[in-house]
Length: 322
Ligand SMILES: Nc1ncnc2c1ncn2[C@@H]1O[C@H](COP(=O)(O)OP(=O)(O)OP(=O)(O)O)[C@@H](O)[C@H]1O
Ligand code: SF4
Ligand SMILES: [Mg+2]
Image (spheres, helix red, strand yellow):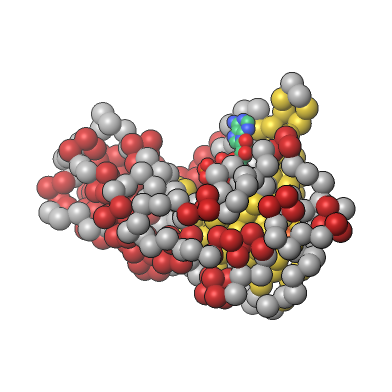
């Protein structure tokens, strides 16, 4: 097998507070192959966004990486200086966030934003950068792309803005895109279009996508593999079709029980009875035990390790491998 594009190994993130250090991510490990779409799914507060932000070096104070390594394109990036990280972020790693307006400058025409981004990272002159910008806007499905170069962000609908953000994220031919809830803020009717576009463009550009979402329906539609997070840990990972058809971890089973369609606006994750423990209040042993229908006394002794079976792995000591 070729070297992975991204390897996250036992990543830990903690928040330093007056009440002590709170461990938000605890031993998060996964890898991504070039061109692969990996979905990161789980309830609110599970640590999905934090994982994405740790990769791009954007953890808010008072958070910090407190363990593990992140290796991207063969080199460690968890210990880079912030100037080097910024370069990497613009050029090799593109980002797409929930609200397109956080990525777009409201006071700059979208063509100028694209040209500026392209020229900051690629050795192109103004005319070449403009040509590339128009091509990108065409690729993301903006009609009359050349005319749209002069438009302002506020002239677009939410869905069209997110298309522009995708164009910006792809502008420097990155090998990895981190998309954090890219459709959550959009009308339900355009969510599926944006997901389909993201998938198609990632394939066309041979870019990998870390697709962060609380919506298993989005993962089912777009991802190749899925990593299920619970209380700061990855509890199951595997090919998306396998995990949906036969989830192994009891928490994944709860998630997969009712995959919402992309066209429905319901948050079915809340249907698992009980709530995920807050980071300061996680129980000893398996953090899912208080909600788990299969829990046994031994589950509360130590955090279950990931048990591998072929391309799959899950952190449960009771359920047999599928
Ligand atoms: N700035 C912060 N200060 C303190 N704790 C934080 C901060 N940011 C995140 N956390 C903690 O880290 C945990 C993981 O947060 P994260 O944003 O990764 O969750 P998430 O899985 O993306 O959830 P959501 O679906 O709500 O976006 C949360 O439980 C939160 O308590
Ligand atoms: S280890 Fe025990 S409590 Fe945790 S998911 Fe498995 S059966 Fe449930
Ligand atoms: Mg989040």
